[in-house]
Length: 171
Image (cartoon, rainbow, N blue to C red; front, side, top):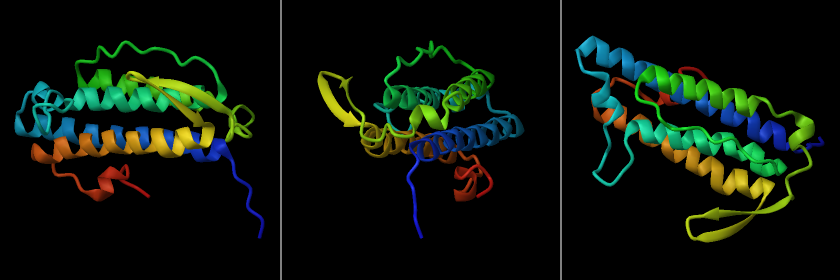
């Protein structure tokens, strides 16, 4: 059996799916706030610890990471999103915009870029990556961290979600 690696198949569907998964848990959170008569801002501004990002900032950060990834792998400049979301509807719009950006990349854009070398600035440091390392060692763990933290914020605030919801409600 021969297996060929595809940077596109590794990156684009994965990031798109993760954005859909987080949209699923946000919708469950919004519905739960409505059912319980909780102002949406309570959930949107919630955080697990005083020095952690709020739910809204978790979503903004994972959206930024996801939309930047294919751009950095192919060597194009990612668009800058304002990060001025204040409502669940705003976050859904951000997720939709992010998914559209990610889905704008094709196999021909990404395949063969696994070993393309580039450097990005992370805080005060310049960090060297290859395309595959950027996705697998930086973007994916970060997107998963912010997704899990968003899930945990909602769960901590009493939203009845479980592991299956983290997967977007389906496998």
